[in-house]
Amino acid sequence: NAGVMQNPRHLVRRRGQEARLRCSPMKGHSHVYWYRQLPEEGLKFMVYLQKENIIDESGMPKERFSAEFPKEGPSILRIQQVVRGDSAAYFCASSPSPSLIDTQYFGPGTRLTVL
Amino acid sequence: QKEVEQDPGPLSVPEGAIVSLNCTYSNSAFQYFMWYRQYSRKGPELLMYTYSSGNKEDGRFTAQVDKSSKYISLFIRDSQPSDSATYLCAMSAGGSNYKLTFGKGTLLTVNP
Image (cartoon, rainbow over all chains, first blue to last red; front, side):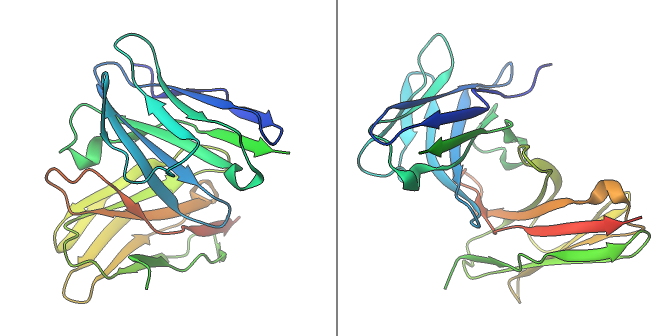
């Protein structure tokens, strides 16, 4: 059973460009969570999605950030007009149920560098 | 005051030592407590999971939760160089509350 997959693993963007981060959950998992890890900081919850629905985006910055989890294909975290402060590691996790706290499995992360 | 406080270290110990890692928290609603291990440039991997207060043991790892003190610990016995990683504590109120609140992580190095 393949784990959570994220791509790209490393992404370099110039200020003002768009960044698209992809997450394929584990087989059988329909719940996806995105977390951001800033340098010297712990992981911070950003958004929780089920297929075709955003359930909780309370951790998402109000502007430039969006997320989706379409019926077919991976979940996408999109950052428009990136700024240097967006440089971080972005992790997604998936679970078969939101209430099973111990079954959030994390992917390897995408490391975004904004020049 | 941050919801979860964790000393970032770094912590360096000789092989075979007993390691103690700790977190404190302020949110009394937290009921689920987890320890993740994160190797450099990798995603967090769940090590231990505890509900409410008490101890849980798994091989060389023991997790302790003291809800009255809002304090959790992870002990590693007979530490190995392969244990060198960043250890993250994480907590949740549980139930329909799926959000994990993480500490900053403690960087541990076990020297052979």
